[in-house]
Image (cartoon, rainbow, N blue to C red; front, side, top):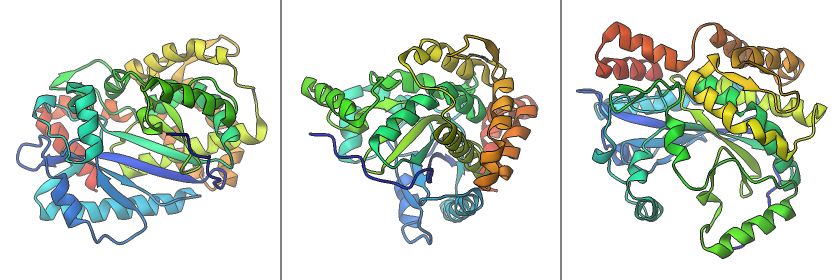
Length: 370
């Protein structure tokens, strides 16, 4: 199948997708009630979107195209409130977080669609282990060449989004020691990681043709890259974030990305090169393992500093762009979270206070549902 042309989008527009946990209000384990919730919300009001995910204990919601922080937050809150009302009718709860704290992958059920069955047959047990929950953010790009430049320029900021969104310290009842253990499940897929260093849409087309000729790839959906182009939408899609515990954090992360993208597009502070990726895997691991306390190596200067400090310096650098985009409230939320803790720290604190992981999930559900 040939790669489609890259659709034209308004630069710096945003779309947010959130994968969410459906949990029982009895024991707070995952519960396979996606079809019931989809039926209950079929007539929701608003331009947003709700659809199934790979297993029946998850759903994905997506916003309409947004330009500014305030309308984005308003839409996400409306989505949350309508979903929460529907969930209460079904006697279930909805939670954020990148992993469920104690579910067992073997108990999950594949959602009955043709694509999800295909993924299950292709990847075996990995498909059920993919019951993890992420936030994806789309940023509009006017053409494919601009999209690929921005994709590679953003690579040095990927650890920021991993550390800021990290909310998956627990897996199958154990504290993994990672702030974002979710990404370890994503890394297991053969077409995960970073996109190839192509600089033009024509060059990317050549790469795509070679991949489809091997039979390994059928469409762009087969790539699980950290950032990937979405030609049908005219966007690039950042895929490294865990689903935050609140919609307010989700909106702030999206606007942080939008503001960085404006800084990169308008100031072009550096030119992306293949060598930028020499430190990419190290930086990404540090963010997953240690969160905001991890270290980051600057690919240009080779200097090393704490991720928290690098984010603070970035916030100072992009402050003028945040003002122009009306995103200062979002930047303030990001800044405040640097001095509190990320969601992984909050979940660990709940575990210490409540001991039972079921109570930790209950607290997370209460927080997400407002």
